[in-house]
Every structure is written in C-alpha cells, then in structure tokens.
Image (cartoon, rainbow, N blue to C red; front, side, top):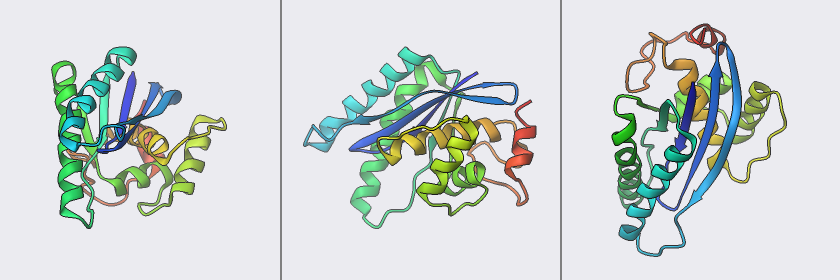
Length: 182
C-alpha cells in the first residue's frame, strides 16, 4: 500500500510517500511544492489544486493523509491555510474519495516520536530510525509530510483513533500502533 502524506500550506507544501508492506514501512519519495512565486493568493489556489493532482497521477497512492488545521495567531493566515488545504482536498476527491484522512499535529508527533509536543529534530531522528537510513530534508515541510504518512500507516486501523484522526482515548503507543499494521 502506498500512502501520500501532505503538510498543507498556502506558500509551500510538503509531500511524502511511503510504502507499507506488512509491518515494514519504506521511504519512496518526498519533496516540497512551492507556490510563493505567484504573488496573489487567489491565483495560487488553482496551482495548488493542479500540483496535488500531478503528485497523485505520478505516484498513484492508495490512500492520502493530510494534517488538520492548526491554530495560528492571524485569522488571515488561518483563512488562507484553510482555503489552500481545501484546494488540496478537492484535488483528491475525484480519485480518492473515502480514502483521505486527517490528523492533528499532536497525534502525528505522538505517533512518530511517542511525544505529542516533540520538536522538529526529534521528528527527523524518528524518521531516520523508522526508515533505517540517513535522509536529508530540504525543509521541515518535507519531513512533516512523511510523518503525516507514517501517522496514517500506524493509525488507519487503530480503533483508538476516530475517522477524523483524533485520538479517542489515551494509552496508544508507537509499539501498539505497529500491531495494527499487520
């Protein structure tokens, strides 16, 4: 099974692809999609939509996971992030309706590192341990997207996480989540 993880943004977005085979998670690809070359935000939405379509058409993931909206201090920034995220989700609906999941930032970090408030360095170290190789990430968006994909792999069949990716009860560990892969 191939899983696409998306770290949404209105100026740049990370994407990460993994393959899950039994209990093994393999790195496939990752990168950053840049939208900041277009000055007008409204003009970026079509580009955002097309870029996600292109990623899906190229890599053909079976399922997609995306980070849920996060709190930001600026209402304007939140509105732009919500619209960009909406463009991404809309691009997925033709081919992946019912196969898109969202996860909160804390659940993503907790699933990958064991700590919901882990810093970027901890996430990167956990990714290298999971993949068993030294990966160099150009931006945090790229590593975050891989963490989102791994979170989905670990929680997609987890009865302790509801359909929106929210943890329903405490006590789920990385070790317990791996049990749900097989």
